[in-house]
Image 1: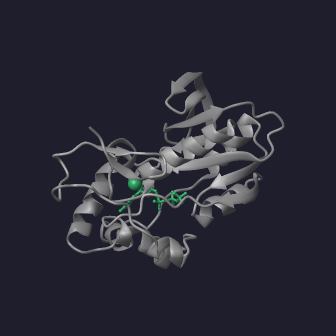
Image 2 (image 1 turned 135 degrees about the vertical axis):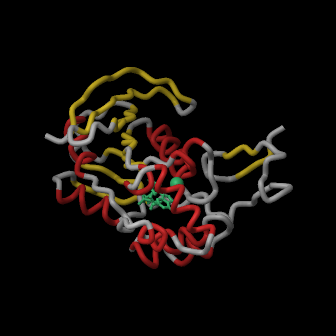
Length: 230
Ligand SMILES: Nc1nc2c(ncn2[C@@H]2O[C@H](COP(=O)(O)OP(=O)(O)OP(=O)(O)O)[C@@H](O)[C@H]2O)c(=O)[nH]1
Ligand SMILES: [Zn+2]
């Protein structure tokens, strides 16, 4: 047993009403979250997302990665179907934690890419493992999933751990001039499943007046489009 369910309640959100459950990972005390919408029923073909924690992207709407855009889109897709599960996997910074991720960002400011920055800090490019997520699906009675991801390792771990992946739904949103390299490195060095059309495709229109963008409020809609807000 990798995780233990600790708490559950209803959580109304702007996407609709979810059931939120907290699972403690026994090996390290991490509190993973499952957001469940609708009736899981027979557990077949459940629209799902394993979302790795990214404080900067998810909370502060950073443009340096695509995480925040993916989180919003995944929740919106689940709401559209009225049934699904999002696991919020507490693996900040691909498992190296927030402090080290920000140290890696500082190295990226000096020209290193995401993989080189991790390595310069003495870490492998990606320290995540998804076994606890498979166990959470199992506890929820989810047997087969349509997984929203571009990461082949998530698909492989689910299959190995007995969760049948019936389909992959690509999640390509939020591309902009600040995360172009980050997305490219994901295909070139991490085997993520982007097409060249995804990478060459249209960037978000950023409507900053300055490079910091701190003189305007920006509104991000669910498709990752950025619009001015009054
Ligand atoms: N170490 C490190 N972690 C990062 C960096 N940028 C984002 N992250 C973390 O990367 C994780 C998300 O991983 P990604 O590679 O963007 O995407 P993924 O989860 O593997 O794949 P998808 O399912 O397609 O989203 C989050 O935990 C982020 O905090 C970075 O430059 N360095
Ligand atoms: Zn991110």
